[in-house]
Length: 167
Image (cartoon, rainbow, N blue to C red; front, side, top):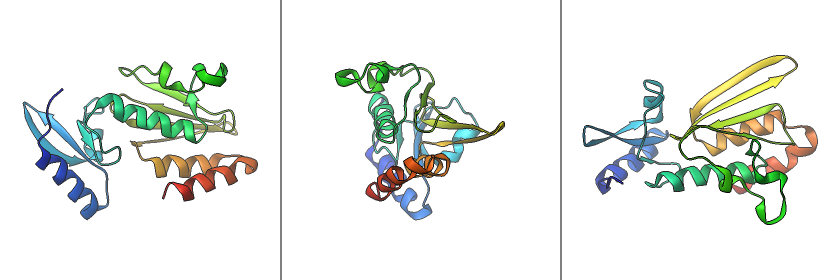
């Protein structure tokens, strides 16, 4: 694992606060630099080494934070161990850290959340024969807001409480 200079992490955190946007640390030819998450659109397969949302430099830890969040709002890896229940509940056991992983919810079956290994998120919603999609860097507030908008009325309350508790 490459050691990211502390000044790069500090710059990313400062810029994130100043610009109110998620900042990432990238590496090109051995040189680290800071850019906003929009930089990922130029080359979607690009890998960042730090982001101001997960506040971690370890790739596995960063992905696990995303998975734990998704599970906390009722989304589990498609075909994952959630069907086993009990001690096997939770999809971290079944996450492949090298590819895209899809997450679904029994409460909001119209929504599929895809997490790429660089933490880019793609959300697909198919409702009433219409398809909508979103693509952005991991942002728990945005994911939660989309889930609240799409959730059936009986599940909206739980998601809204979760939203309040995460702020």
